[in-house]
Length: 173
Image (cartoon, rainbow, N blue to C red; front, side):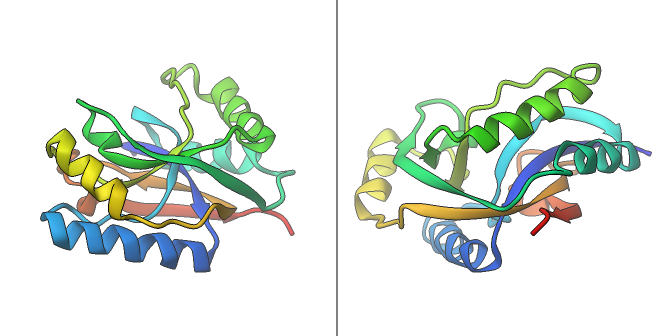
């Protein structure tokens, strides 16, 4: 069955809890949706069969070990709800390898420009509020990526709390 999906890189359990706590705090404070901590590696309206997505995703990371990414800075965008306030991530060779492995297999479905980041809040808020959020955040510098997942972004696409993780593949160890 075809569904609207995104492919996410997933954090280690401890980093997922760490980021989830920040996301929940911001969601409560700014009446925003809660969502699963992730780094979207391929998405933006990808419609495909979930079993096919699982096969492609598993193949794309078959030789990948867990790896650590570094925060570049906490940032925001003016008019993009999907980057309200986010952790901008340093370039990392494994991010490029996974993205290219996916892109080769998924280009027939949809092209996607990968800009490595992890969102902390999705909400239409003023620039002043975004700056205030950033000023009040203290975030650690490194995060362990140890899995890839497929999330359904169907339903209310604008409500991140309705997104569901359908599949998770841990990296080899």
